[in-house]
Image 1 (tube, rainbow, N blue to C red):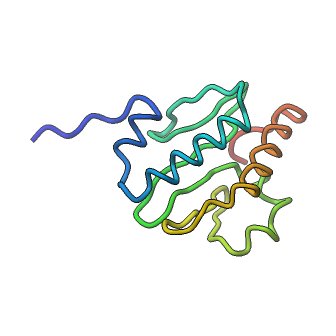
Image 2: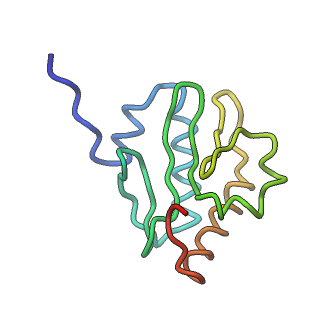
Length: 125
């Protein structure tokens, strides 16, 4: 049996993702494109990412949630806002069946963009 090919574009990644993840992935993609309009949309590690001199953030689909990865340092100022979400060192889990916290995600994305522009912040610390 021939394994399916890996997606080569963000649109193909979303199309191949679990059906329940696609609406959230499309919303998050639109939100991030608007937050960083000059960023290049690429696939890194097989998942969507946005680059503008450095990697700004990425996202991915999983069994019961999507992950938004803005880096740990970009999450620190929003620690109180993130208590209702499962988080990892550099990730925020956004569960299926719940609306995206768009205002919070916009603020985090804008913070990460400023962080990269002002301090040349690296991707992972």
